[in-house]
Every structure is written in structure tokens, then in C-alpha cells.
Image 1 (cartoon, rainbow, N blue to C red):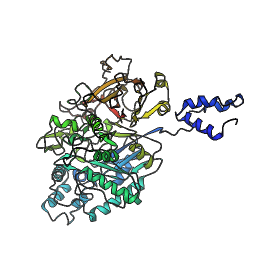
Image 2: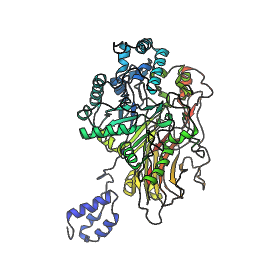
Image 3: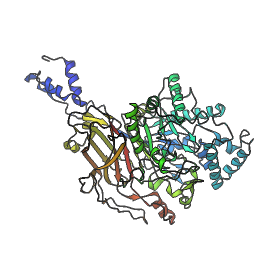
Image 4: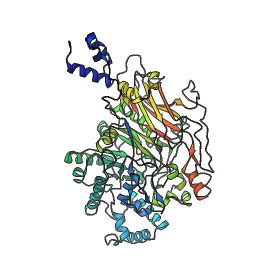
Length: 636
């Protein structure tokens, strides 16, 4: 080579391929003479040196087996082996007697049995002497073995006593917990197959404050060598998330391992999930914000117990905000919901509060990416609308489950027909391994889906053009010119507004796409966060108005009586580049994409058809499945 070293050439070429300093190529190419023109060319294959994530992996980070005390008491008789077999595509017999199988295997799972009372159910069921020394134990033993409604009533009593701090036994006894935790670890190690299927070690920390749900799922990047060194954190240890984070730090210091925590969707927290003060009543400060951001990169936006993206009271201009809404009270319905609580429960309002705290503290405590998961207590994360096995084994498929009380208490009840067949986590990772998927979750390159396996890409930058939306490889240009979902934009180029490249591909077994929207939240000049919904890509040639909205509905082909629909409306894929028309470089902001399918039959329609029953008039029979990406944040 003349006038330039081979090393310099490699550096320049690498920069080109990863979307780096294109201008460096133009400058350096002048250094090559005509005899070396082959050195000026980029690689012919666009797949050479590709290091970014090219696959989305779908999984459930919140699955319970019979090891969870409530799940077992509700009637779940499927343990770790059956759960892993089902998740990996195998066929099992559900606790209610039906054979069950997923349409497609999942790529990963976190079996997250409750840490409190881990192993207690088996002791109740067998009549262990340690449980028979109290009247409650004798009563629950009888109810569990009787089964049916008696077992469900026992489970509800257990949940109520536990949530109110009145449970008769110590739920974190190491003598009981340790052997069960070892079994949990052993099963995850047995079923984990790097490159093919990922079984994470994990558990659910069940934080209940007077019935208000602040649960977190704790996920290990590690294997058995680290995980065996400590026991899971429990409510008996503390109900305060700050104490959980202390325990996570202690684990990492002791083992050299890595953990993250995923908050349960907050619609049963009665305003505490995204509160303006700590659980101990102190104002949020910078230390708190840094710790929450460090340990909790993701939020469980959607699951069986309702959807937590938005609420119509908080977002009155968003016609899609009232989706699978649970807003009566807290987990045991011991406290009624008020309008003042709602802003502390939904992810969109949490993200907005995060901007306000970022302005005040210099750190955003609510900087969450989004995922969905099931919170199924049946061992079966089956949330396809035509294959929905319900929240717990008392509400598995049957002619009666629609009118079964799923949750109930002094201030209301949630009926079986109100269960949401939701959701899954989509994770863009470089491989199907614990390390790669965990790292993708830590950097928030994730999205939530209510069930369908939509493929969604979302990138933000300053230089995307309409031509970029014509590419069949949106990620190639997306990573070159910008940051993916979960990323950050800063240092505004003079006079530029942020541009976003967003693409969605339908699930082959689900409905076509209605539209892609971008939800923007920003901090106004008064320091208060605001929001706006933009339709950025719509199907069937419909028009988007000057106000950024498409006011023409996509239509509806659902035949409720037959539980069928046709994909004669909507599009199989949508892709576009959108520029924020209202950008102010002085204002903090976030952006995330919401992808909507066309209307399709809800699980209640399939159930009515199969069992030849009439659903109550209040039951929704049609749904619009959707996906929510992690946000991209802009900071001045």
C-alpha cells in the first residue's frame, strides 16, 4: 500500500461499515492512487462485519409454577419440568385437564416463583406437621385437597392475609427456602441451552404495602455458581424497594454476578409505582434516582392483570388509551382507586414524571424500557387469544370462567372476562444466551407485545431521510445513523429536529397492521410534562392530517359469533421516517412507538364459540393487539 498503513485502512473501513466517520473515507480515499482503487470500495456484502443485534427473541419474564404458594393453592399442579417443557414447545396436560401447547415455542423464560413462602404449598397440601399446628393450616390443607372453589377461596384468603402482613408463618425460613431454591437453580441450569433456549434464574419479590402491589421480578445474568451463594430477598425481609436494591448490591459484591429487577405493572399499586416520594415518605433525591435507574432498566407494561401503558383519564385525547384497563383498586381490593392515584400507575405518566425529576435532580428515576410478560400462575404462558389459559388454575378454560371472580375485596371485584390475554417481551439481542439477552434488557433494547410476535424496529437520530424507509434492512441504516429503542439523543445539531426510523412487520398468525404511532412526552417551559400522540404510518392508503392524526378508522372484519376475521384490511408491514414537527432543543423529551393491529377476536369470543355460551354484555369481544417500544430520550 502506498502512503497509508494497512492498520489505518482497516480502521477507516470499519468506521464505514458501522456507520461511523463516512467523511473520513472521503478524505482518506484521496490518499490512494489509481492503481489501488479496489481499496476505495466498501464490502459488496452488506452482512460483513455486522455486529448489531439481528434477531428479536420472544419470552416471558414473569411465570409462576406450583412452587408459588398462591399458584399452588389456586390449583396449579404443574411444576418446573412441566413449565419448561411447555415453554419450549412441548405438550402438557394443564391442571384443569385440557391438553395445552403453544403455537410456537418461546425463546427464553424467567420462572419467577414468589420468594416468600417458596415451597409452602407442598407443605400445606401434604399436611406437613409444621403447617398443621395452626387452624389456618388445617383449613387450607382440607381446602387444597378438596380442590375447586374451596381451593380458590383458600388462595384468596392467603393472598389477603399476606398482603395485610397477617400471614401466620414466617415466609423466609432458610430451612424451607434453601432446598427449594436449589431446585429452582438446578432446573434452570438443566433446561438452559445457549444458542437455542435461555432459561434465566430468577424469582419474584412480592412487595405488598397494605395491599398495594410493588412486586419486582429479579433476573440473574449468572449461573448456579453465583446464584447458590445467597437466598432470594423476601417481603419478610422488607417491603421497601430500596432494601431490595441493597440486597442486589450485596449479591453482586459477594459473587461478582449481575442482577436486574423488573417492576410488576403498577395498575394495582394505587399510585405508589411512580410516586413522587419514596416508600418511606421522603422526597426523591439524586441517590434514589441513580439507584432506581441502575437496578431497574425495564418495566412490565402489559400482563394478564391489565394493561399499564396509558389511561383515558390521563390521556383523554388518545382514543386507544382505554385498553384492558383495571382501575378499581389495589391487589386485594382493600383500598379504592382515586383519580389522583392514576398518574403513579401508568408507564406513560411515569415517563413524564421522569422528565420532571431529571430536570430537578439531574437523574431520571423512571427511565424505563418496556416489556410485556404474563404473570401466569398456571405454569402456562399461553396468551394467544385462541389459546388463553388464564391467570391461575381456577380460571383455566371452562364455560364458567368468564363469570369467575378473579380478584375481589371490599372495594370491588375483577371478573374472569376482564383478564387480558397478555403479554410477551421482545428483546433485540446478538444471540439466544443469558448474557446476550440480559445485556439487551439492561440497555433497554426491548419492546412489549400484548401477545402477537410483531417484529418492531425503532431508531432515533438527526439524519434519517425518506430514502432510508425504502431499505429492506432498516437496522443497517438505523444503527449507522442513530440509536435504537432504549437509547439517548443529545447534542442537537444546529437547526435540526430529531428523526425516527420505525418499522413493523405483522405476526404471520395474527392480524394485519392498522398503524404505527409515536408517543412524545416533553417538558414544557413551565417545568410540567406534556404528551402528544402522532400517527406516523397508516395502512390502506389512509391520510394523516395536518394535526398528525389519521381520523379514519381502519375498519373491522370480526365476526364475533364465529370468532373469525379476515386480513382484507390493514397492511402486513409498515415503515416510515418521521421528523418531530414541534421539536424544541431546549426541552427534555422522550419518544416511543406504539404499533396497532387491526381488530381481531378477543379470547372471550373464542370461548363463547367453543363452549356455546353467551358472554355478559360488559365483556369485550374484540381486541386491537399492540406493541410498545422502549423510549428514546432526548436531553438538551
